[in-house]
Image 1 (cartoon, rainbow over the protein chains, first blue to last red):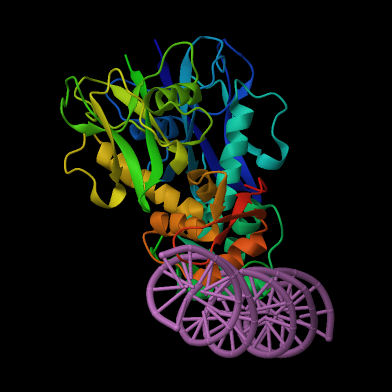
Image 2 (image 1 turned 180 degrees about the vertical axis):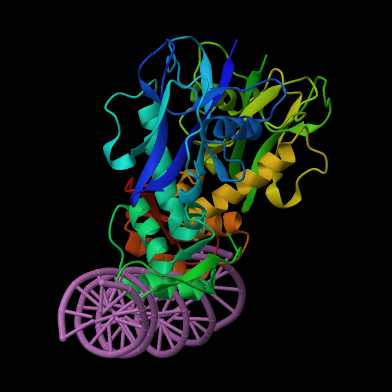
Length: 210
Length: 210
DNA sequence: TAAATAGTGTCTCTTAGACAATATTAT
DNA sequence: ATAATATTGTCTAAGAGACACTATTTA
């Protein structure tokens, strides 16, 4: 009989780097390998609910951006037998990216996508590749980037998120021009001051067209 | 225990209209309702293989464009219990869109997406919507459109495919300009003559960047 | 020669991207 | 004043879309 799991690629930004949460498996198979958080779908929950539950168990966060990615069902992808997995990805704001003191996860850790561990469990390297690719594509034509920031942010911080996801530098003037004409951001009467330099205006996301 | 099915939205063009293959269910639940072809995933086959098998069983075609769409797993989507379905969509060239004399399908029929039957089984109306939406988006930045045509085709026929998918008319000159600069099409030394008018040159798809 | 469809160019507007100087704050 | 970061505009090139006439064939 076929069994179904969900795996959730959880993204956040750590030190200006796009990062994912991985857990070290405490049980066989693949004990000790790093894996994408996930688990079996329970009888009484939808796929989305299962993904949300995994997310909550690993990070404690509840209200996040979550999107289904792809369903992986190759034969032999899991040595335990016929297990297909529905992969999701989630975006967590930097100020909420705390790792829960998990029960079944022996260890959980944020990994920059630019330097992931060499050995990942099952087909998880493939799933991660796919998730990163999707996120890169999606930031080009949606506003998912805002999900990775706290409610109030500076335009430089927002640009930094885009740079982290795209993996390349972005021109400051062109970036601001584009954000402005999309009309998705609203200035606050607050400024962030850091060190001996001009303070930066804070903005918030205007929950417009997604 | 969770069970897994695949459903395959099979597109083709019939009389210049984007159409999908639907089967009339011969057994309960929802006997008599029109449904997307599909069935349970067998133990020894991958999800892709299951989708290809369904496609072959319904239409006899083997070598087609097939892409996973989304996995639907809401509670209560199937009255028989906990069944999740991995939806695919396929594109079949007009010259190969013959319906196989199916065994378990009481009846199979091409339906123009602009006038689908009122009552569809399970959540299949939703799945169809999603498939059409995906195909419309995809034709904007890929060459999937060629999959719906025979090996040799005229530019007017190609344009007609785009119009069928997009559901609107397209400017002939702009369309040809775009196709030409994409360099995906190769002229043949053959012409299609039909009635009392200037013959149209035939082209074939240059299997370039997809 | 009439009817029918094939084939072809230009102009405008918008968008994407390269590029550098001034403004404001704390020390 | 100096150091540090924030903020701002122009130009160019490419792409998208509106728009109409000529070419070729058969009946």
